[in-house]
Length: 256
Image (cartoon, rainbow, N blue to C red):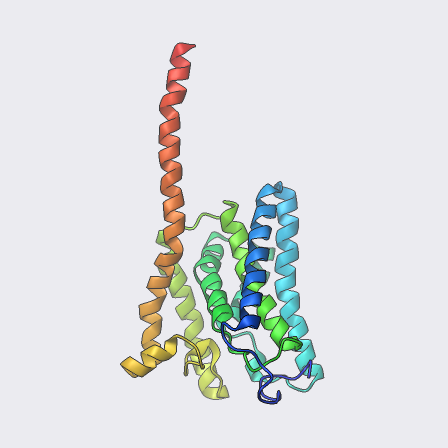
């Protein structure tokens, strides 16, 4: 049962959304995220880079191991390709380990974190039991996808700017267009472009507006602004603090 998938697992052995198993996972992931941020902020530049490489490598290696297991078990198919948003972010993190770019890191903050959090809060692998490879992999990979960009932002290594939002959206659209046609030809549902899965909030748009696709232009700007709000607040607080410190410095100079 350990290597069975959502398609081969028997019914009645999974977990419920926001049940005890789910809540324990969320609690553990929260603790690990906070501990990782605390440790990362205390490290110097070289040690931060090492920690970032380790976590980024874990992200990529985890996805590779998943595919290897699927091949060995004879379960690998076109649906295993990394064309969901989280799979794309795995590739982007791998690229970031090679070449650091401001635009890419902004994209990871705006889309990787909320996308992974959405998967963690509304998992589509609830049919799988705790002692199952795909169950464990799904929780851990999405946790790592949250941690990696959080480390960059919380340490101040990357500055998230509101002016990069249009570029991030254009990058997402440039990915979604070819993936939409891949879905048509391969009968897949990458990025949930063809239909919302059970428990996905996009289902509300299909129910009330006739198509779940309405959810993308409505939710994306909202999510991005929500992601920016705490950073904007912190930036404003820092500006006020710097402004308050400058008069004190002038007074000190004049006294001397």
